[in-house]
Length: 65
Image: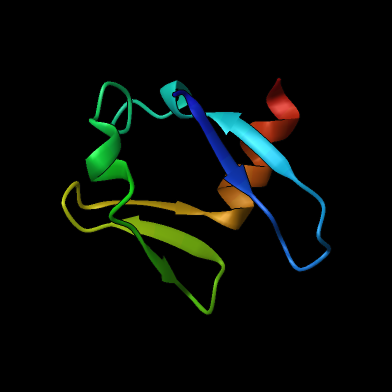
C-alpha cells in the first residue's frame, strides 16, 4: 500500500504516494496507522517516526505529479 488519502472539509479526495516521503517509505503499515491529527486538522504526525506532514505540504506534493 503506497497511497495516502486525505479528505479535506471540501469532501474532495486527494492522494499522494507515501514513497514520496523518504521518512515514510518502507515503514510497516501498522506504524503508518498510528498517526495523530495536528494543528486543528491541518497536519498529520506519526509519533513512532517523529514525522509530520502538513496539509499545505501535502497539497504542494499532489500538484507536483
